[in-house]
Length: 565
Image (cartoon, rainbow, N blue to C red; front, side, top):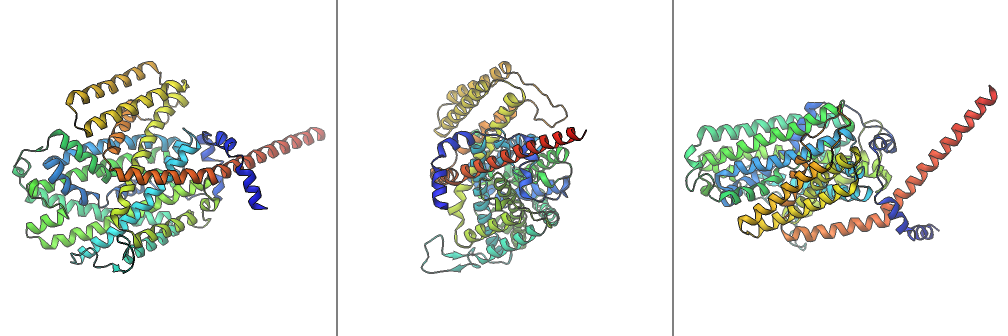
């Protein structure tokens, strides 16, 4: 009986797709009607310094330790700190786009909610599914790297010394990591208990981590030499191309600020607190990363920087063997903080996707006592613990970057569309055409750069992109109807540059990342066709029936009152 009912419903899939794929919600509906589906509300306990600490903790992981040395030696040279500055500008522009949306739509769904109110249900679902994929895989990868740095902190040089080798399992899946599983279980329990207490734990760990970064920076500036920045080969031995290629690599050290936007339902004053939390955390991390990279290049010439465990190896060259253990301990602390923030954000994403009924509504439930999305937190913790137990870092790392960059790209497009079409009431065709051309020219520039074509090709494409943006800004009027809201200044330039840079960074990824991404995209699309569209269609039918019943009851009540009078 149930199966036949589903088959009958499935036969209407084309009509449901036509109605639901481009269906949008207003910010008011996201804030009120959809949020009520979780039952209890999340508790508003977080302040601006909690958000700054969450943003800093989410970004200050192990990325700077892993990427700085190899990029300085093989890609950028001593100018690696300039690469970090360029990557910081890209991250800041993307964060500005997130900030405007988070103030306008202060719900826990982050990019999922922003894209759903702009481009419709399917684009929001597609972005949300990719964000969840990125969170689960990156958290599993980061938790396994925790074991490596923890063994380093205790003086073990073999990264697998604390793992269990199991014969008979496939290579890449045969080194069981119980330390990573234990870390995920402990953090999951903390997150289930309370968001505020988890935030305080992150604040303490982040403060110690910043002090640890300060130790490395001071050691570099006090013991380094300026000559190491210019010898041998000058400050930019690989030229401008090397600086930009280096920026594409180190950019991934900035991923994590988007988690702050998922805290919107747990902040006391979202319109003022969110801009400080998102933009402030990006600026602080940018300064720390640039100073870290500069201090490393001051200590030794770039061609003598070891590619693996660069900071530890450099301290050993200086005779500071004890500092290698300190680096391992500090990296462990950073891993725990970044993992805590990422796990905090991933549960909010799944909770809001459950509210939309794109996954079972059980995931949307908020515990009435703790005020946390308990079900989503536990299930996602189990998933990433299972992956972390078996899977090597290299197998999952390729999938992480492409999903994140795609979401940043979509959010920047959505901001332009929202400002120029939805808020300014302009016809959508001009804006959509501009976004299409912008993506095409961005891809053309990136391809020309990758193929190392002559400089005049790059100059021609860049000039075309700038001219096109100027024409769009002149022909399509931008109307600011809400002077009391936080808005990205100088539109459309920040979002345009963000789109350009995200496309450029996506073209730097390996082909294997696109193949695995294609498989994942096909899977989530099939899930949407089989389950998601039917569930949301049914949820909207029920909501419409409730609205009709309420209207009927209101009319009947009014008639009774009139008769009484």
